[in-house]
Image (cartoon, rainbow over all chains, first blue to last red; front, side, top):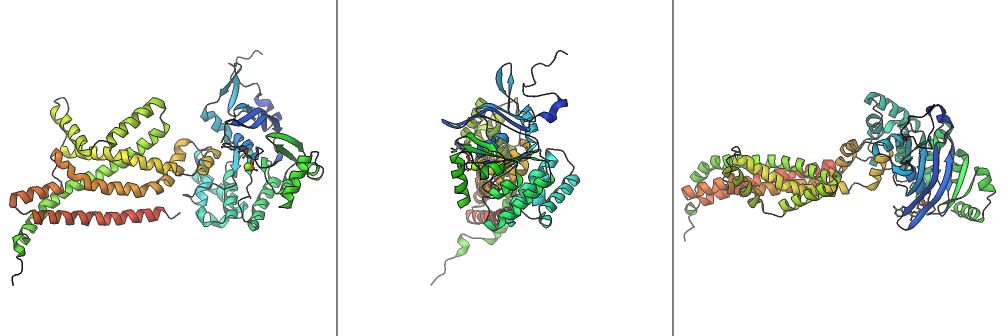
Length: 276
Length: 226
Ligand SMILES: Nc1ncnc2c1ncn2[C@@H]1O[C@H](COP(=O)(O)OP(=O)(O)OP(=O)(O)O)[C@@H](O)[C@H]1O
Ligand SMILES: [Mg+2]
């Protein structure tokens, strides 16, 4: 059947019948520059739906930048990112790379959640208000439904009794668990975790990691994880990508990369992390 | 040895006679201050928001207008608009108090817009990132996240501007609005009782502005609570 489509469909996208076969995330020839500093160059990789991928690599290798590009907190300077097969911020239209309108970008980022190193809870709201804000005003849920869901999530992260507290009254570990619950309240298909325990006192790290371990066991959310907690990475991820200088140096299952790295750089990096 | 004779420059009789007249003038002062503050607070926020969202040249025009109002004296603006209405037969007659209140509001809106801007800028980058990560629409995010946090930093200076407006209301004399100071001036001249009139005027100012500044400090404290 000849297509009457006016070219609005990007080459990477497919019909609704075959959505299941698209990768959850696909980077195609992605380049990211900050001024003259080329941080990512010609980056290509895919993450399958439900896959848990840990990104490791030395400081400045571009791990955070990759997550921020997916969350559209940074804009890529060239190339394309596809989410479930459809373009995230730019598409190829009549052979030209064209930016998508903000509204359309937001429609895609709705499926993506992110948890930050510094939590970034809204300090002017209570814990419950933090959790119902986006479900009510982005997904259009009723307050009662959003609140019921928020309570369920707070229960899951072990903070059922804190719903009326303001974030400033919670410990870092509790704040981070609220932030995880806030991201989950949007039912994301993809969850981005950027060093979510790095700002925590050591004794608070396990509570947060255990919440994430449970989440990984109970759901099929696609996860992209940046962490220096190698045991945690081994526990939850099927795949580890080692970055160096904005390029993928190694890509494989954690057992392989952690015990049998193919590159000298990877071995050095791992022993440096384990020494800490 | 003679004690100075206070009755030379202070008469209780005159003071009691002046009080109701001054209070009537103070009514106009209050109207101009309260309504002017409301106008300035709303218009100032509108300007601050527009300066953030307007594109290119409109933004530039608005900046120019704001700079113009901020850098010319309030009295000149009052007189200009007053005579614009008074001399122009096409325009309807507007009471001087209305013109004066509106102009004080507009004048201070340009100052308050700057406070709002600083307040909005003080919202940490991480908050904007959380807004994006939750895909909150800009309008909603502004009302529920940015503005409440920006107000914490803005309220103290809005309060200071409200007090400054209060003290600027005597300029309304220029467009023949009889507020507190003018009514004191007029009573003093008519009865040769300046001391009584201006002493009372000062006391009324003090009686009004001191509780106001306490109230502002209260508001700051309650905002600082989270
Ligand atoms: N906003 C920015 N402006 C300019 N340069 C930036 C910016 N953000 C990141 N960079 C640069 O991009 C490079 C990659 O940074 P990125 O934060 O992605 O690294 P990372 O792998 O997350 O490092 P770390 O382990 O320290 O978090 C670095 O050289 C950094 O200096
Ligand atoms: Mg990083």
